[in-house]
Every structure is written in structure tokens, then in C-alpha cells.
Image (cartoon, rainbow, N blue to C red; front, top):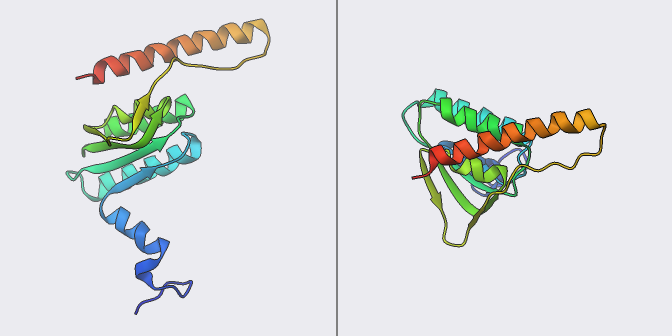
Length: 154
């Protein structure tokens, strides 16, 4: 029986399951949306797209949401790929994760999952001009989010 570097049978190791997911072109986004998770998701999306340009990628999502800019980085990557990306909600998608879920070429949600979206939010304690600038930014983000949802509704 083949063993991995930890002297475990390969068929029962994380390494084995990781390889299976990669082989099936499945990406798990089970984390908050931040620069780290966006990097991992975009890295895999681009790698899978280079490998086989016509085969679909499945992006499985279960996330509370997170940072707007990191979420839009994932959304923009999906939008510019030539291969289809199917989004699958398993558990919950909230906030920025819900926006990522709607950009899939095909979109799926399991029967015990839920989807939640809200207006852009921020907790700011700062100088008045910084608060005004941040408010303009949030208004722009809110418009982007609304336009994306309008564009993707069936």
C-alpha cells in the first residue's frame, strides 16, 4: 500500500482528498472572504482554466461573507474566465459570499442552505472628511452590488 510523507495510507490522507478535489475541478470556499481566501480561490480558478478551458469548475461556497474588494476580485476572475464556473451553496452564503454565488454560469443551492444579502456596512470613527469620503465609497459599492444583482437575476 502506498504511503504519504506522514506514513499514512495515501487513500486516507488529506493529500489524497486534496488531489481528488483538484482532479474534479472543485474549489471549496469555506472561509471568510479576505485577501487570503481570494488568493486561494483565484489561484485555483486560473490554474483550472489554463488546464482545461472548456470544462466547468465547481465553486462550493459556505461563508459568512467578508471584505468587498476581495469578493469583487473573485467575481472579476470568474467573469473573465473562458470556462464555465458553477456555484454551489452548501450551508450558507451571506453578505459578499452571496454576491459571489450569483455570478456562476449555473447556480445551485442545497435544500438546507440559505442565502442572505444586506447593504454595505462599515463602522467608522474618524475625521469628518474621512467619513464623508468613506460614505461616497460605500455608496459606490452599494450601486455596484445592486447592479450585479439586477444583472444576474433570472
